[in-house]
Length: 148
Image (cartoon, helix red, strand yellow):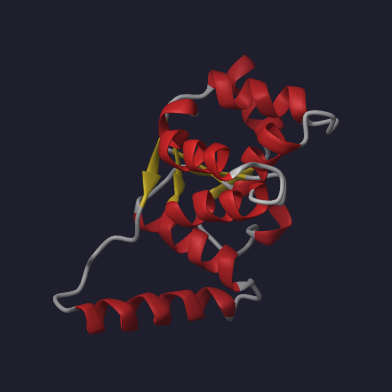
């Protein structure tokens, strides 16, 4: 499963004039078995809230998985109690922060690893490279691989 970072959706939804938009759109249309996290979706909605009406924002949130033909991943519940789960999540996120990551990226990376995604696709590869065992690629790199 390919994990898609927020910036890919931001370019698609809000920046059609961006020089990467065409490659970005092709990636979203041609790849299958894609996912993103609930945190990425909320981040996208927060960014889009400045440009969309409440109705448009609600449609984006509720229809997102269908529009992009992907799964929205939630943190896995791995511990027997809510307190244990919260402590576990915090400790894992802090481990990522110690690798010099900001909190949102650490949270996103944790979910992509929990679901054993094969690739993490982002235009901000420098935020994740060397901090995960996942293959970190841009949409353009994925498209080149698909062409082979």
